[in-house]
Length: 157
Image 1 (cartoon, rainbow, N blue to C red):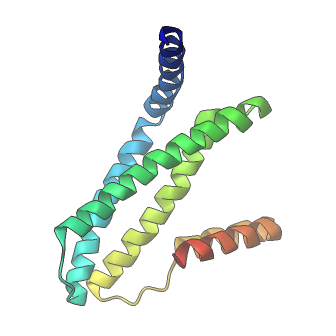
Image 2 (image 1 turned 30 degrees about the vertical axis):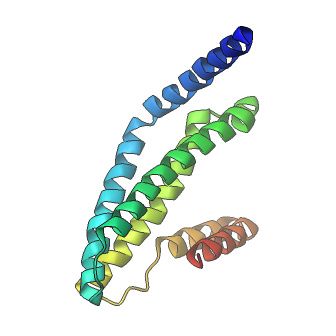
């Protein structure tokens, strides 16, 4: 039993150290995500007030906390993909994690823009994803179609 605890403890130390290293390398991106979530929280409340909805602090807080946890999950997932697939191929795992976080941050920026426009009463039809998809399609049509399908599925949730 004691040997099992030593193995588990060693594993936690090794993998925990890797994750802490990844978090340290991407600390500014984590800070950006926290700020984006806070800004989205603020303008989401303003947009809900503009729609005349009753603001429930528990629901808003729960959704905000859930977003922060999601960002940590995206970061860890990106780091694991980077270590498992990227590193053997010569790609820096931190770069893979940064790309995952960057994509998540783009979704957040798009949400912030929608909330600001709704709060200000502006008809919002612009999407960052439409611009990105158009840029990718101009280079690689198949990849652009795949991204467009993924974004469509994400928006329908």
